Image (tube, rainbow, N blue to C red):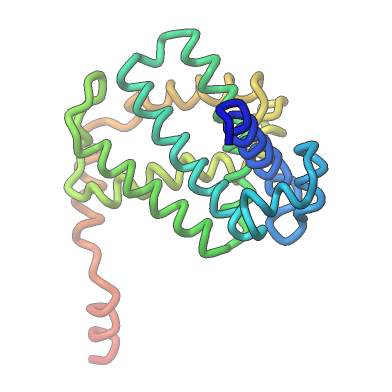
Length: 221
């Protein structure tokens, strides 16, 4: 294959993948079709099958692309700084279609969505455990739970985007709503609403809660 042919082939593959992200986001995996994806990408059904084979293989490619893009964007944010307007414009342009896709994928209840979430938790735990410039070490004795809850909060906002959009008066998976949502998230991360005393008392009380097995044994007595 010539250099030009290879480049065109890669461009077609990316165009199909991007169209699939939007089709899966709108219709779900069950509702989306290879024919509909081909039409959205402006290619033939045969070309979609040439690049990806089946719809499930295309879904797997979208999952891998979504996760890798999130990882690369987060890494670049820490390396280059989130204050760069050029970076933020790029991140928003790239992230919003992926967030729309993931919002649908996470409520589909598929094994692929479960893997996507688990991979995101693992990546967050890895980042939190590293010495990253501009980020303080988390104050926790359970880093895995910290990463899982943080991931759940982030993904939860994607899943609840319709409710969040209604509350904020703008589509949170669009630029205006995303800007307002993210500014609020930064404010929340920057604030410490609870006093150290209240936090210490709450942690102590939670750590004294009996395990489920202990409760059952007491009831039996």
